[in-house]
Structure formats: C-alpha cells, structure tokens
Image 1 (tube, rainbow, N blue to C red):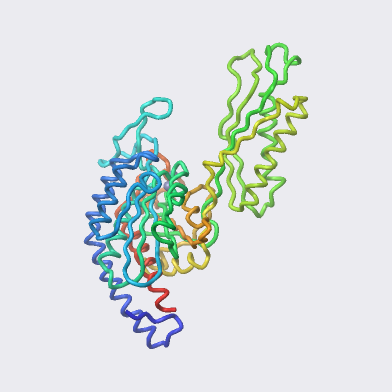
Image 2 (cartoon, rainbow, N blue to C red):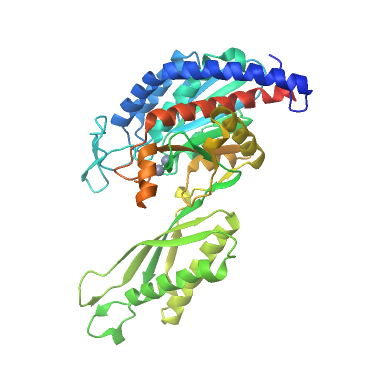
Length: 445
Ligand SMILES: [Zn+2]
Ligand SMILES: [Zn+2]
C-alpha cells in the first residue's frame, strides 16, 4: 500500500484521506463487534486482580490472547512479564506497553463484577485486592489493540511488540524487564507507546502533551538521633522529637527558597515516628519522605539540601559526629520522570485526533505522580516514548461532579470505577490508529 506524505500533491492527499477514512470506518465496525468480548475480558481481569509481582494469571491470560492471534510469545520476562512479537514485513518496530498489577485496597464500587479477592499484607492482616489504578483497562486495551492490528495486517508493515509489564505499583517491573534484555533479546523498538486511565477525564476523551508527563519519585528515610532520658529533665537530653520538628519545617524551604520557582518540586514528609511514652525522651525519630520533580538536577538538589539541613540541625543541637542523622535514599525504588518525546507525542496526538476527533482530545498537564513507563525511554538505546491519558469517568458522573463542585474518586481510591466500555472503545481506536500511522510512517519518507 502506498501512502502519500503530507508533502504530496493535493490530488494524492485527497486520495489518501479517502482511503484512510474507508479503513477507519471498517476498523470502527470491527471494534464495535469486538467490544462485548473486550468487556468480558475487562470484567474478568477486574474481578481477579493480583498484587505486584504476583500477576501470574493475568500474564497467562494475556499470553493466551496474543498466541491465539498468531504472535510469538515469551512469558516470565523480568518476573511475570510477557513479550509478544509479530513481524509483518519491513518497517519500524512499535512497542505498546500495558501494566498488570492491582493494589491492596478493598473495593467499594458496588459493581456486580467487583473484586472479592483478599490477601495478607506485610503485617499479616487480611486486605482486599483491587484494580484501583485501572491496569485492567490497560491490559484489555492492549488485547483490543492487538486484535485490531493482527486482524488488519494488510494495513501496516513492521514489527509489533506488545509488552505486558508486572510490578508497576512498586516501581520494579519495567526495570526488571529491561534488565532481562527486553531491547536486546527481543527487539529494539523505534517507538514506545503507553496509556494510563485518567480519573478526572470523561470516557471518550484523551489528554496528551509533549514534554514531561509524570514525575521523578524518590523515597527517603531520615533517622534523626538524639540522647534520650526522662521527660521531666529535658536539659540532660538532646531531644530528637524537637530536632525532627525543626527538620520538618526546615525542609519546607528547600522548594520555596532553594529551587527555581520555574522548576516543579515537592517534598512531603509522609510519616514521622518517634518515642513510646509521655514522659520519656527517645533516642531517635524517623521520617519518611516522598520527593517529586521532573528535572534530574532538581532531584539532586533536593537530596543534597536535605542531607545538608539534617546535618546542620544535628550540629546546632550539639550532637557529636557519631550521632549525625542518617539520610537513606531508596535508590532501588527510584522512578525517573516520564518524558514524552516531543516529536513523537505531537505525531501521536495527530493520529488520536484523526481517530476520535479534535473535540475529544485535550492538552494534558504534567502530574506529580510517578510511572515506571519513563524507564523505557531512559536506556542507552534512547528510544522515543509517549504516554497518554485515557478518560474513564462516566460522562453523567463527570457532569454532575462539575455542577456540584464535587471531587471524583481518584486513582487508588476504593470507589474508582472506570466506565470501561466507552473508555476501551476510545483507547483501542486511538492506540490502533497511532500504531498504524507509525508503522506506515517510514514507508512514506
Ligand atoms: Zn497506581
Ligand atoms: Zn497505574
């Protein structure tokens, strides 16, 4: 199939748009027919969520779906990861990624297909398991897109690479798959695409923007030491609770006074633990922090500043060298920011506009949440990546929430219930169109 470039003659451009629109309507018809079975798959995945690193049945089910479509499937890549490949002639390699894990949340959506799965948490307490981040939509969307592309092989040329990734919620899945040779053993993609459901965008809409999409995430523990003693004789102690209080306030000035106001930065102390009794001054207090930023330099600045402040506060209290605070950055849990390669994001946005109409595509704003999707674009191969937000809120609920000034259940909420049918219809359409346009792109150059 020959594709006219945008630099082609006016006549050819008209011919192209006619042929593309014919294909588009065929694809839409196929997708409408496919929707009930995709809905069933969604409900099944939703009902049986699995926690990070336990995605055995979800992975098995996806592998089956891809094999049935005639793809070459490898399981157990970096844990429960699945890689499916299909070489359809010469052309670029397009990778599409979906994550598979659920969360330790007891579902409260009241849906008839709600999850009843429970598990034991770290403290041996029984907790529910729920797809509270919409990864069930992501998996179903990947299967839907695979069906569309595999059933219409004549419309594209290249290598389709599907990646079902485990353990996104704990930030280790993408890392593990890359480490196991995702790009060396399987294929080196020319483009990597992904999506995430949005809990504040109506189903039927998509948000996308070039540049930073999601943030750097670091977890940091600070152990502040002191000299404990009797609460009635504070002058004989160095009270780590007081030092921790100073520390919490001092940390507020890193973002407000040290980092450029034009560079986003968040430092949140999420937990503070110290002491055991009213009248005892303890020996230490621990703080647990989350740091967010986009720019890697801002991240380095945050960490350097909090180390300096922790030491400074300890020194000002007269603590000796051996009682200086310990700042521990969890490097293994670090998630770098997700950067949508501008050229690719702009191209994909164009495809999505063609697929679902400009009125349904909005400019995405970067968020301070993290996603390990960003790692796929941060290897030595330097592959352009793009993620977009797939609206998932029921339109009536959305309109009502705007009217009443109510906030909607967010991602990770026990009440988050995506309106999966219109979301999947939109997501599959957008992802299929984007992949096809990318496959056919080199041909036109
Ligand atoms: Zn999540
Ligand atoms: Zn997620």
